[in-house]
Amino acid sequence: MNLPTTAAHNTAADSPTFHGSSLELRNLTMAYGDINVLRDVSLTVAPGTTTCIIGPSGSGKSTLLRGINRLHEPKSGEVLLAGESTLTANPDTLRTRIGMVFQHFNLFPDHTALENVALALWSVKGMPKAQAMELARRRLAEVGLAERADHRPRDLSGGQQQRVAIARALAMEPEVMLFDEATSALDPELVKGVLNLMAGLGRRGMTMLVVTHEMGFARRVADQVVFMDEGEVVEAGTPAQLFDNPRSKRLQRFLSEVL
Amino acid sequence: MDWLNTIIRTFFDFGAMAEVLPQLLGVGLLNTLIISIAATLLGTVLGMVVAVMGISPSKWLRVPARIYTDLFRGLPAILTILLIGQGFARLSQSIFGPSPYPLGIIALSLIASAYIGEIFRAGILSVDKGQGEACRALGMSYAKSMALVVVPQGVRRVLPALVNQFIAIVKDSSLVYFLGLLVSERELFRVGQDAAVLSGNLSPLVAAGVFYLVITVPLTHLVNHFDNKFRTGRRRPAAPTSGLKEVKELDAASPLTTGSNT
Image 1 (cartoon, each protein chain N blue to C red):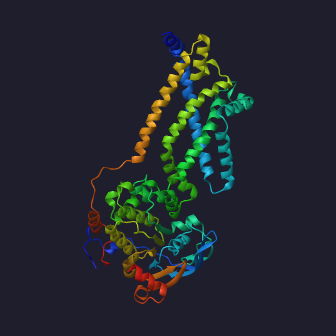
Image 2: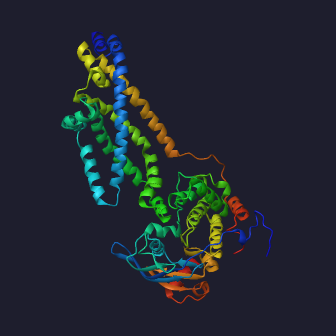
Image 3: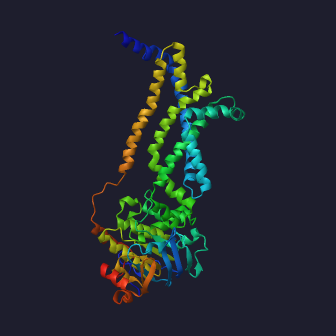
């Protein structure tokens, strides 16, 4: 189809497509000190699909994400990114392949939005600074922030900050994106914009693991929903299976509290 | 009013002050500033090393940094200056020549670095943990995340404390005279002291004191000014914007978010 494109009506063809990789967790166990906060979690995420992880607080959802990019080292088990073990890889190299977005954005406050996106491009990827800035500008435009490129984080709303954070992660061209409650700290009217942005990434082929309390998003966007409680995967399946026919008592209980 | 006259003659003899003024300016003030600034610069560099060692994950770096800090912060400045100034006199002679001046600066730097190291360490540790995590998540090494993101933020926060440290060094620089300085190397205190002994009058020392205050008092107020500024932070002055406006903006302008999924 040849649709006329304007700034306001971009088609999918204008936007970057992503090449998401597969992700597989096998019996992943993680601990803080002697306490196992994640026990024997196994999970398969097909390339280009979106998996939403839901569950009550303290269920180990965030810990799971941090185990995948090894911000917290797993105790035992295996994590495979595109079929290769992440645990034997160099952690810094591994993390360039996995983007992460945090609940509190964690933007660099003394850098502009543009510099936030460009920093890792030149300092990690070794791109010349001018080229890094140029690429960063494009990435910011893709998340609708072309005009805010020179603002510091504190001059941006929470929604804008989170979009900068997403652009910053995407600029590294990751194979997988991890979202750790990316909309939990946002004002309610700004949540949808960020969720739509995330859904857009999923449609364009990014592999995503999304820890979220947004059940509407999980139902609408996820290819797979995983319900965790007390450090274990209690139930996993399609959104319809989990939301319409929850089998376990714990999921039924959880859904009755949040829906 | 006899006592008032005595006080004026002892402390505020303007004739005696005027006499020593050229020396205070040309020798004393100059040397005090040279010693203090050199010791501060050297102390800042050393302090940064000590701070980075002090927060290192490796205890082989952390423990020596701790001992170093405890040692130089715990000893009286005069004792450290004398031990280093006299203990390393021979070594210093072969490098810098007979003057104890460089050793005085080094001793002051070592003392300063212990304090500055603690200032930097506190500043770096006060930076939100999420900053380092965001760096690491982007693939930066520990060293890069420290150098490019965490340390600059920590240092900015402690700039006022560093100025306070400089003030302390300016005052401590008076102790270097214990090492025995050449006439041309004397700092404010020594110039004032010599003149006071010669004239049998304390006024030259009072004049030296005034010079110390001229350096330190404006700095103190400058710090307070900056401290307030840092705390309130700079912001672009902007009228409050409705979040709904941002929603509209977003709907209009981003290729990744267009397309219906509601």
